Length: 90
Image (cartoon, rainbow, N blue to C red; front, top):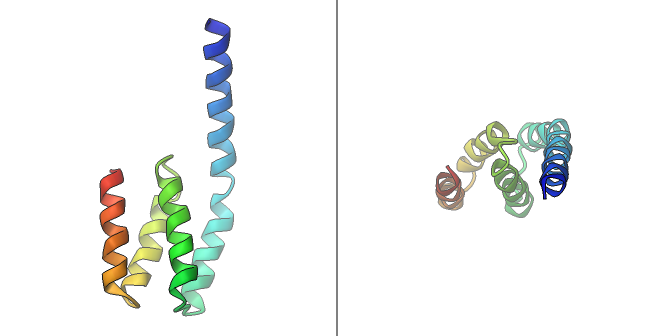
């Protein structure tokens, strides 16, 4: 049983490290969306969904807020939906 728990702990640690390795890519994606003044809500919401999911693992919360603040300038109503979802996670 101890071996099983130890293996599970290692697997979870590897999983978190792999997730954290995605952050530089996501930072670039968020920067590109904002710099290019993207207004395509499908693209923005896909990124918000991804960041919201990663936020459950304490990864990319800062990027979520950054993109959410940008999205508020485009669609306040839908941005507030994402804000409420984010608040549920905390």
